[in-house]
Length: 267
Image 1 (cartoon, helix red, strand yellow):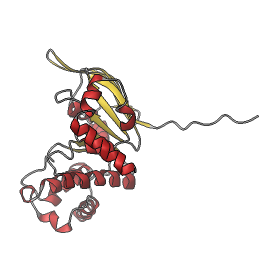
Image 2 (cartoon, rainbow, N blue to C red):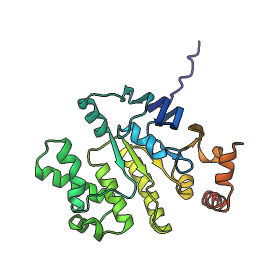
Image 3 (cartoon, rainbow, N blue to C red):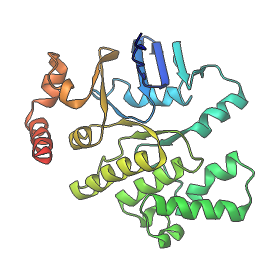
Image 4 (cartoon, rainbow, N blue to C red):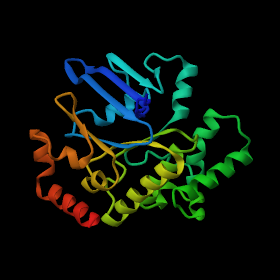
């Protein structure tokens, strides 16, 4: 008798169920559900104000929903004690919108902050780790002594990624990583995301409006609309859905141009 075929289901590293986010009478999320798979690059898109950044802030406990469940690696993270909260932050790295670097600290000092805050490593070892992270994100080593106001927008974002990777997280959250960059800089950052995902085995969650990034980098895209994840699929499947918001978003001139670039790249 032949053995049944074994189906390898993707491992779920983040599972969100029936999430509700509310401030006063304003409801941001209602009965929101989302699963994030290990090793994927998933983007979260939607109109301004639908709670895209809020959602990833809730996963890492920077914001608190009023109801629902968020599990990371199978562990419920809402209402964690202090020790468990530290565990979560060591497993999740966050690049904030616009970098959020400390203006009074150098590049090296910014990257070292999580290491000093959450480890007991020696100063020498921390300096070695910082040196490695700077190289990992493609920054010149002489950038370590510069301050944020001496850096270009693209360099600031790379420093922010290096800091997010300081504790070797398994999940990397990126909030509008290519916003404000010129096409060349945005393209280089797209390449960095793919390189880091492949070389470090990361799971990457991106909040973005960048159509080129959606086409060139992501494995799946989740659409936030009507307070929920109303659709989730790879880009080539997503654009075929008969969903008013999706069609309006991707069938404009910029959306068609990004799609054409993807078609040309395949050829």
